[in-house]
Length: 340
Image (cartoon, rainbow, N blue to C red; front, side):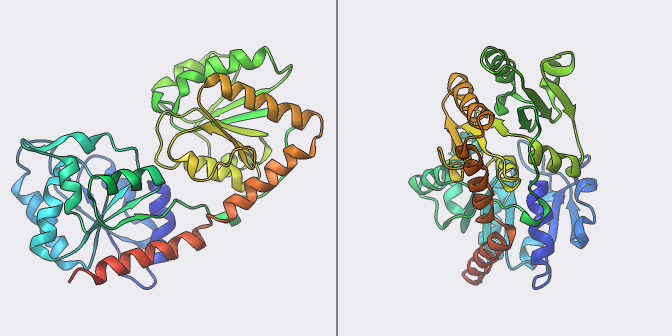
């Protein structure tokens, strides 16, 4: 989410007045304060259950009245309760952005109403993958816009790969990212690939799996500069995620000319094309097979490996932020124009 904000706000603020509204929760306001010159305001936290605090609700409403459009993202259930009501009262259209796999859509936002019903009351929705669009349309949500994440292509270059076959994972070290499957993947690869390096970038509760594991190279949190270098020098990125909305790191790897082997789930399906720029797999066994195929092609100097790399870069070019942001701005203007 931070990457999305970082990329679109500088591009939007030239022709638009943009205000970032955050809940006054520890760390959140500080995280976005002064973000690339965007005005940041915070309101009292609305809480997580029961009736929201009156002061927070009124401040939220006052911001809605003064805006031409409200875009809600990573919004908790309390705000989901208030947003459709405030949209009706203020006549300001709301767009609900779905940037993460939505576990809350089946929750009860009121004792008698599930979130699936409330979703229908928003003026528009913004999703990152086709499955999310299909689901929202099936439950009756209106004006569902599919606009993917993007990548700043100029920040990612191409360079020769490592002499040792290098596998890369980048992401939060949590179960939803399939991190608990990586030791199994490594053990299986040790039986098939004579020599390889497995770099792991990220932090999270499952980092204990790698702290004293001499079969992987655990790097923890790294700078953006080093991360880009790792993308460039690696031979393949693996992402055994169980759930994703888009999987931006896959696109970043492709921008660096590195093919991706990812779970066959919503998100990666948007841009990973089997045999063209990487592979989609159903389980660890298939991931091992595909990584071994990539290794064999690279080891033999087979043109098919370098074609995967070239196609990965071509795919990333389709998702440059310079192409994506105008689509977002068009959505904002169309929805705002249909509001008041």
